[in-house]
Image (cartoon, rainbow, N blue to C red; front, side, top):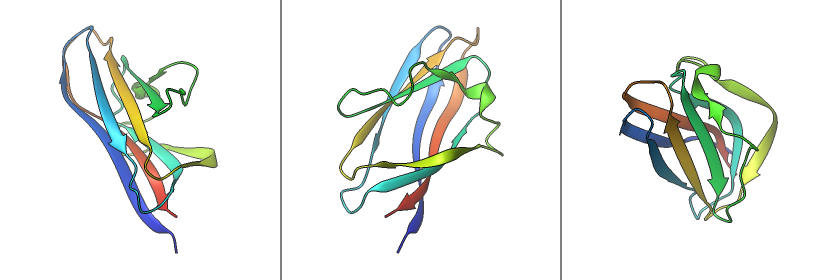
Length: 112
């Protein structure tokens, strides 16, 4: 049975022109199927995600301002599965011109 779950990476405070690297650890109990992505929606904060092997999940970092303000997210056109026991490295790169706080990347989906 699938169980709804949200994996979150959160950067409390990032200075202008700085980066914060956070880790999402996928549970050892099951693979994780991602269906939606949501961010804090701050324009000028770019996010990149790599899995534990170093493979990037996108070819470029994306502007979190394009994903939403935390109220809405982005439904993926096709789900993808992250293997159990995986670690994801999430890099928040603040190019907004000022300090930012409480930046989040939420991977919404199901434990399989």
